[in-house]
Image 1 (cartoon, helix red, strand yellow):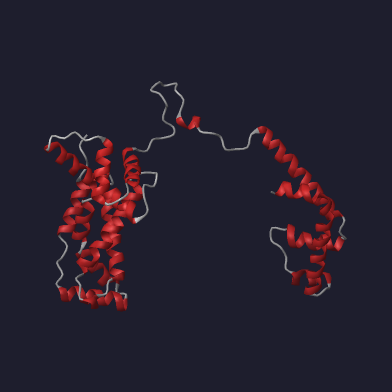
Image 2: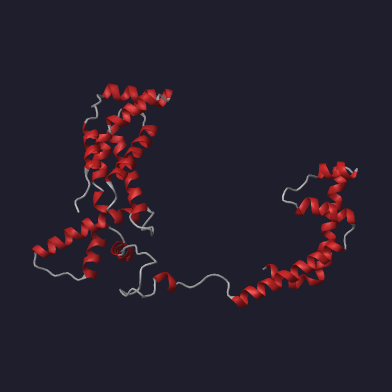
Length: 292
């Protein structure tokens, strides 16, 4: 089936039609955005350099990311560059922006190339984007020289060429060689085969563990209820309103209702909690084990 390139072609045409800005106009637009947050100036500056954004995005097509997505990320890179750009330094916007555009697109490619994150540090990014190119160069040179290289030899030469430890090169090579598979895929080609997801260990509690947990929680609730029952009605009321409601009441509200000061309600609450804590001391070891 032929690829639908109409969207890509439209993006290319749009980028080629962008106006060319001279240095003075570019600086004026940059000042207008920096000093006055003039959105029209920002839009004109970004639009003028969509040609640059498209050019950078096109270099990453080989990673399998749709071109419209790459161009969108490149546009975000342009906006970041415009927000950071200082026209007083005498540097053209394109010179400054290309680094932001490239970095933004690279980050997007690495986030979407695989469901498993392949790298986050600067060294890992360098490996990700340079390893295949260096490997192809080494293999082409070996082929011209009539030399047959083993896998470990190729990786060793890549490590030397890029300047990264061999273990990092081997790890990245393994990640790039793999691909994402659905857990719903069958382990064999047979229609009645077992799916990979069925082979995963069940992390949920087993029946015996569930029964034990329920029993322990029941004991703990019983001890807490017993400690609560040893409190006076006023203490029970205050703890219920302060600790057991979805919307706890304030000390001041309870003080008004009970005809007490706010500080007195706080003292009664603290004393009640102390009584419950003392009552539970007889079960302290068991309580600690259940709450661990």
